[in-house]
Amino acid sequence: MSTIQEIFFLPPLATARLGGSDNPLDSFTWIEDPTLHGAGKTVIAPTTSLEVLQDGSLGPFLPTSIQFRDGNLLRPTAPFFELWAKLDDGTEKPLTEKLLRQCSGSLDGVTFIVTAANRKAARRTGNSSCAFTARIEVIGNDFGTHPLLASGIGDQPLVLPGQPIPLGTFQVIRPVEAAAMDVDLNVLRVRLTPAKGEVYGPPSATNAVEQDFPDLSRRYELVPPANRILNPNSPWLNYTGDDTVYNNPEPWDTYDGADDDSRNNQSYGVVDDTCDVLIEAIVIAAGDRLRATTRAFCGPPDFSPDRRPFVSLADELIDRDPPAQEPSELPLEALDRLADLFQRAYETASLANVDAMRDRAVVGGQDGGTPRDRPRTDDASMTPRDQPYYRKDQVEIGSPTPEERLPYAAAAQDRHLAHAEAEDLASLLREHPDLVRRLIRPPYGAFKKLKTDPPANSRPDPKQRDPRIVRDGLHDMRMPPYMRDSDATALSLTRRQYNFLMKMVDQLAPKKKGKTEPLQTRAHAHMAQVVQRRKGKP
Image (cartoon, rainbow, N blue to C red; front, side, top):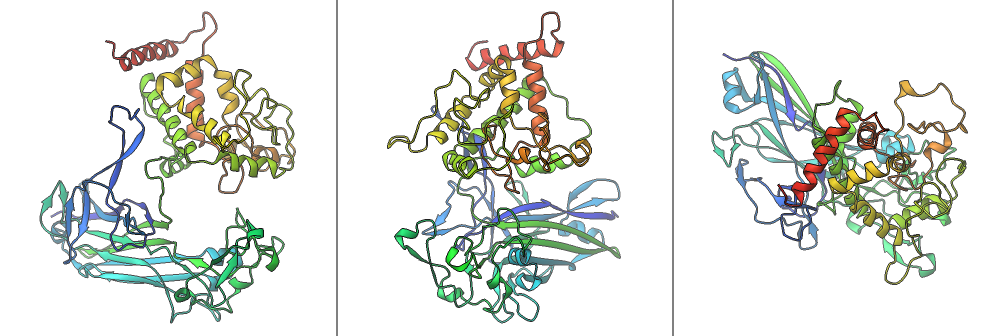
């Protein structure tokens, strides 16, 4: 008889997306546009999806199309989580009800503990009574739908226990000894369905004036009447964002009331139903108590599902814990991987209002920026005055016109698109290696590589940034231009992406006579092959 040594969830982390519809979004995947005029751009395609039937079991199917709305209501993204087991023989496999029975376990010996919480107001105020949390326990043979009703604690909780905020639902899936469409239906699964995407406030959260256009006196509804249920005596209603009183996150002004100078930026007391969720599974098998956890982030809908970010969650995680040795790959394979990164950069740029981001960054008056040998941080940024970063052979980006209202955004798309193909990217790296080295903003360095207590006005290191040096956090035209990191400083590639790009620049850049390396020769040979292949030649 096999023995379960440990259990774990797959995936170990997931993103759920809010939506008001009762129908969850079907599954899709990214592919290159296969049409004649698609130019290989990223599109979405339906893939095997799972429908929860009335008895709690699953019905796999393949959608013919992807529908994001039902009328005006967005469909939520509701992820499934599978339990897996590591056995005493070292193998790992899905934990099915059949395997559980073979290991002297049963569904009534399985417990799921779900905790969902929104702590954003508590984070700002420093007061735990402004958080709201839901916690439920569900036995493994209970296949009903369980609401996650969140409330607060303390003498003046923001969310009163008698009027909780729903943060979604949780359901254990009924296992069935069958398979369909290559899906094993006997696996122990659970599903998290996020909330509707509602806002909540106190009785006073009725209407407000649009602060971005005060002359228009345009009023809007803060919170629907049915959702004005929060405690009017909560500390959240006294929050002002005053950095002499509060330890504010960045950006500091992302709360309702932050731009209302007439009220001293005082909070309207509004919150939403986004949350973080921790799911814990406890399995009793053969007298052992086994435990696994997974997490989900419940956030807003993705309004551009066919556009990939150039820094993904996977990129961030592997950058924090990179492999001891990168996998071996041929130069052509490495170039294709780098081209995919540039393709993702183009997809990100196609969504960005670079004009607005530039205006916010440079016209806002960044303190501490001096040109010296760094790109400009003032209104000369990304203009011919921004030398040697703005190429002299490039046409100057003009002022907005009725035909081209966002000239910087248009230029960003055009220039990124030109480097999204492997052969064009290789030409750039070969012909302009120094320009590429200048134009790519370096990431923040690892702690062990940073200097001890550098002065804030220190001269930046061209190969890495230090968050303690003022100039290293300022925005300029280096790639990605004017995009904000989580702390509102200038965004960069991850260290792993940056090092990979610089390695490819070194490999493809022309070498001095008599210094050509074998890898360089192979890379050029492979590039010649891929160019010929993509032109349809043998």
